[in-house]
Length: 263
Ligand code: NDP
Image 1 (tube, rainbow, N blue to C red):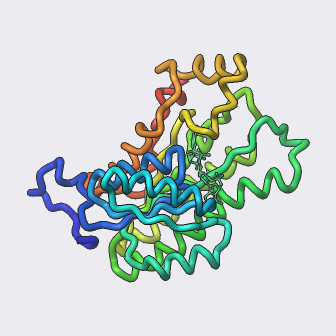
Image 2 (image 1 turned 90 degrees about the horizontal axis):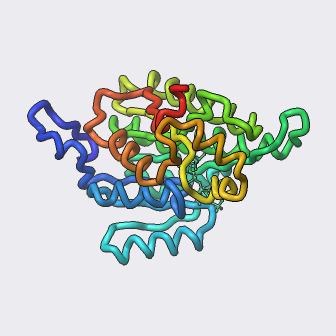
Image 3 (image 1 turned 120 degrees about the vertical axis):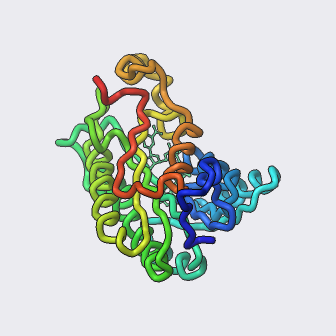
């Protein structure tokens, strides 16, 4: 099943089905990652829900299993390349990799940013994402099939305001360019690599906005749709990109931004 790509005769809705495939989602214990696990498993995939907080991963996976889904929990800190390699060895059959783990540190003017405030964000968002692409991608290439969806951000395209977060923005722009680079290298060998670039999404990462009217005014006022996004609205894009419905897509950075980048 993993190597199969829909043909011209495949009914359109069937192209979204992931039956028989195995998907690994990093940072899957909450937020966009958790809802993505649910989206992919509803489409038929078996899920490996990985998070650096092993207990949170177990509890999130347990919640999905109670709903009848096929979900296994794993502890994975994506910044540890040896741990990433070991998990890729353990689950050498991963067909779909969703690189969702990411952190943000905002309201830090660049001239006052500490070494750690810079490095910690780049280490998770860019380095960790690359370790996962390298480890799981290598095994996909050996099998001649697989798809990777990276969670980038509109911050890789525009500069958010008013909060300063140069390191986050730079890390996400790098994720987009890494996505294109890997897509070009791996397309001839059957592996697709795409990214979704979300606007502000209602998760713990952005919860601080509700205490800041000025921030809220900028974020909502700067969005033609006049609202933040929900995690399920990003999970739906990830499901599409992971599925054969997107068989012609590789190296795409798909904006899901409520129109934010139109203005
Ligand atoms: P959350 O903070 O809600 O969830 C992120 C998850 O990733 C947490 O479970 C977190 O664990 C985990 N994680 C963090 N660091 C690591 C690591 N080193 N290894 C493994 N897991 C880790 O974030 P969101 O759901 O909001 O964000 C998910 C992705 O979407 C991120 O890449 C983010 O940059 C991106 N994004 C989010 C937007 C938003 O507005 N929310 C907008 C655009 C992009 P822990 O609890 O230990 O931190």
